[in-house]
Image (cartoon, rainbow, N blue to C red; front, side):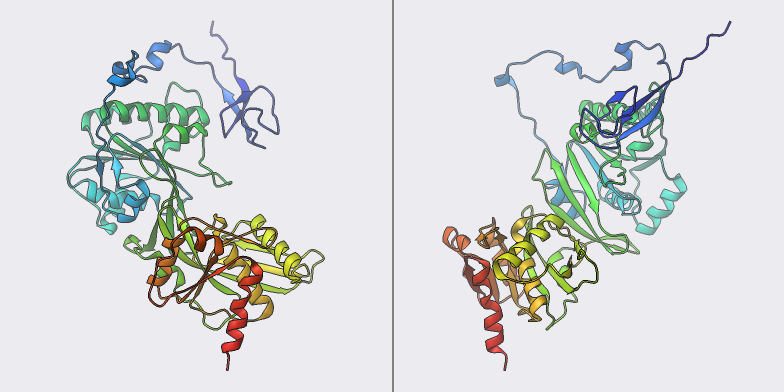
Length: 469
C-alpha cells in the first residue's frame, strides 16, 4: 500500500531565510516588512548529512593550527582587460576569489562578462555557464561583441551537480555562473531561486573555488526594492559584491563595489553602452559635464569622491509656485531627506521661502550622490534658481552644510581642487575648515575661496552682480 506524502506549507523570509508556520508582516529575525512568502515543503529524501555536505570543508583545514605558523598566501591579481572594472575590483580578479555581480535585467551584466572573457581566455581557461540563454544566443552575442576565444567553454545548464562535474572535467581557471538564481540542487525540495536553493548552490560553488583555486563570478538578480534576490547571507559568503547601476534609457552605466575583501570599497567604474558592447569612460567628469547650459540659473558644479576617484558633476535645481496644498519635493540622484534638510536650513537661516514652492533637484548623468560634501552645491543651485541669478560656469563648490548654516570640512579636499583645475574651473568654494587643516595645493589659474557659513557663500552672487556690466 502506497504511503501518502505529507505536504507542509511554511512562510519563509526572502531576506534572511527565517521560516515560520504562520505569516507575519515583519520578520522577527531581520526586521524586514512584507518579506514572508509562502513555500511548499516536501519531505527530504533520505540522505546522510555527511554526504549532503560533503566537500563543504577543506581537508587541510579540519585541524586548528598555531596562528604564528600560518603563511600568508600570495594572492595574484589578473587583469580583466577593462581598466574600469579592474579599478572596482582593486586591481583585477584575485585567484580563488568569488565575485557577485548584481544588477537590473538588461543593464549589461552578461555583456561585460563576455567582453572580459576575451582577455581572460588569452592565457587561461574560462567556463561560462548560462541558465538563461542558449549556446547559440551566446555565440551570436559574442560574435557581435568580438569576444570569442579558443579557451572559452560554454555550458547551458542549471543543475549544480552537472555544473560541478563539467568544472571537474574542463578544469577552468575562471568560472562564470549566469545566474545563481537559476541554479538548483536536486537534494533541496524548493524551486530554483528560493532562499534554500541559492544558499546551498552558492555554498557548493564557493567551496569548489576555494579548494581548487578557481576564480568565480556569480551573476545575481535584484528584487523590486533594488537588493540582491535571495538570502542576505549570499553577500556575506562571497569576497566582493558589485552593483551594476544606471538608467536603461541612458547610455551610461556605473559599476560600484559595496564589498571587497581584497581592495577598497565604494570605487566605481563608468561605462557607456554602445552597439559594440560596453565601452570604458576614462574621463567620467568630462562626460558628466558635457552639454552643460551657460548663463542659466539653478546650476552648480560639485566634486564628489567615489573611493579614490574625484568626480565632477552638475546639480540642477528648479523652484516654481505650487498649485498643491503640500508642495512637491523631487530629488533625482540625491537623498530626499538630505534635500529637505537643506531647504529647511535655507528657509530658517536665510529667510528664503521655499515652503510655497515645488522644488525639483537633479544630478545630471544619472549619478547617485550619497556623501554630504554636495550640500553646498545643492544650496547654491537652489539660491540661484530662487533669485534667478546664474552662477559662474567656472565655479565649483563642495562642503557639508550644518543646521546652523555653518559649513563643515570634508575629506580629500586637495584631490577635489586638483580635479577642478584639470577640467578648467577657475573658482573653488570650500569650507574654511579645509583651508585651515589642509595645505591647499597651488594650482595655476584657480582661485580658492574659504567660507565659514552659507552666509559667507552668498558673496559669489554679489561678485557676479558687481561684474555684470
